Image (cartoon, rainbow, N blue to C red; front, side, top):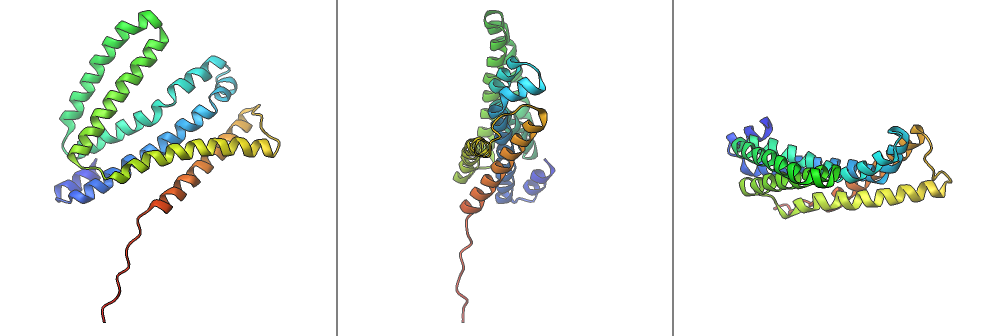
Length: 213
């Protein structure tokens, strides 16, 4: 918030846009990575840590919400930095009201899945309204989309590579917390490496101008 507010007060609009894109992009990268690991290892997390296969199913169902919730929080902070806190408050009020209505209508009929549907619907609406406001207020370049697509592709690739690697070396099974942390840590390391590689490859290069004689 103070970083964005300081740049906005100084009239550095392009700097505000760059900081906003970097903040939201980093949060999206982190959130998508966490969600990918939770989806890939949801069954193992449920069985080994929670001692419940059903818990693994709910982890898999709720994992895609992680990047949405992270980005929503980050975007709300950026909006506060550009003096849009009243807009964020109105969106949160709409979110809360809609949550009550959906829970009242769906939970008695489909139980816990109605509650999960309510979380998805409200979080997506909240995040969409906030991101749309940020794009209108600050402006987001077309390269911002790559900051979301690259982590999604990297999360998918890292999960596949990790599974194949442990199968190749003869350790495909996860039977304890120790092996679970090894698998998850290895997958996270591959994910971070792929994201950094993609950012390095797609980073715009500065044009070199010939020196004047």
